[in-house]
Length: 286
Figure 1 (cartoon, rainbow, N blue to C red):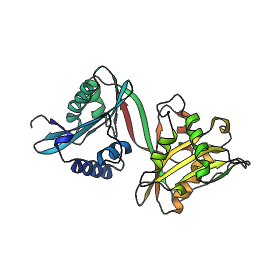
Figure 2: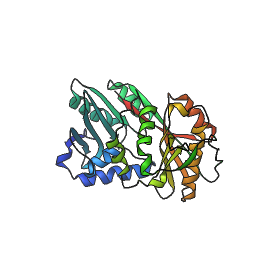
Figure 3: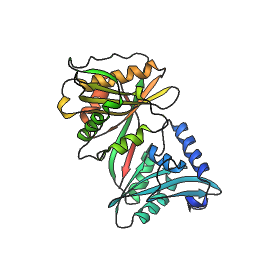
Figure 4: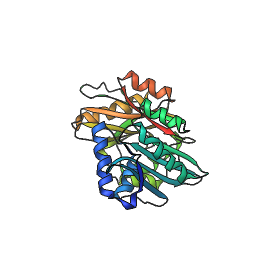
């Protein structure tokens, strides 16, 4: 079989590629590229600093890669649709696009063969996210601390939500939240205020959030679970987690999934304690 050929996205049918990636995600049970990448493909998000290409083999698209310039580094997504053999070609293209800048690219639903191919191409794992899930047939909802109430977000809560996100992710790869970024995500087609739960004090101070998401007709997601530093250690994480699970069950969903950093042992212990099990891993390569 001939080697795959890299073709700039501008020279292929973007809608076809977008549909292909969406179908691949449906088949595997989750997105093969992140939501921002799908938004760029569909034109719903800025394409500034963005370049993408597909790998073609005998007339079929067998892979996809994209890079986005981010200050002094380059982020990306890489998808091999036809086994590990295609991956080195896609990674080499991303490395070339990055030049002397650091490249951090995400490989979702990673297999051992793909990770071995990435290692042979000179890449290492920078970050590993476990995707865990469980059914929602029965949910034991934990009570929040006495001074806190869990409810759906209102517009008056948004500054407090942003403060929680900034504090919770300060100094991490998920940091850098802004009001514009928060509003951009609230503008996604799937967003509903009812699905963003907050824990608030009587005077309206936001202690934590559980941002849930309806992914499909039967599956929900913990999009973001964050607790303000001053409210940690009181059982609020379990209360918000189980409240969100109950909410997803109430709107008719059968299961929930979420992403958790494998280095976050405290979070892993919480999810394990309420019955979550590993489904797959997404890895960031550099």
